[in-house]
Length: 231
Image (cartoon, rainbow, N blue to C red):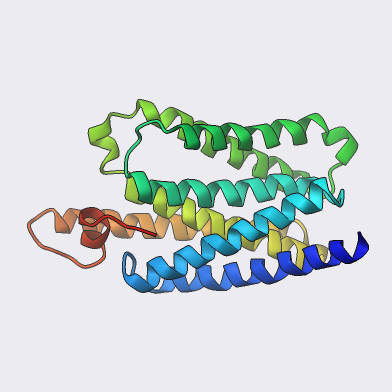
């Protein structure tokens, strides 16, 4: 079991590092283009492996159970952000509801056993991570009540927010683990950077879409708005 545990950790580290590098590339290249979509797909594959190895670490090798919440946060962000590209609507889908409820279950599991698990990381990080996961799940379950005509203008911004959120959660987990002596700042700083990126990219595309609405076809937004994005 010790050998399997070390192999699991190695796979987790390699795929997590690859996901961070791919996330940076996805942020840097033109959005909606072939390179962006291909890099994004590989990012999601690496993220899936990180999630799987993280779950093995918690449930099979009985390691830090707080990793379950971090894993669920980054994984749920990535899953939900990808699903938006597939559906581009807020029509209820069974798969989305099931994953949302399963992610919610991880929060309840962690909170229920928190006294046994202990506050291994700084409380501000633990509570903010749990709060972030609860907030995004609550939004996803409530978005079905948003008028469909309104949501058609929102899905791009939601995709941006969630995919950057997935990248940020990985970055915060990496920084918090590597720079353990600098808690909680080694986790707060990546989170602040992620929020800045989310706000910046969303504002950029809001302005770009407003310009595109005047019968001017602009690259990037038109690729997102007018073409189906296939993985």
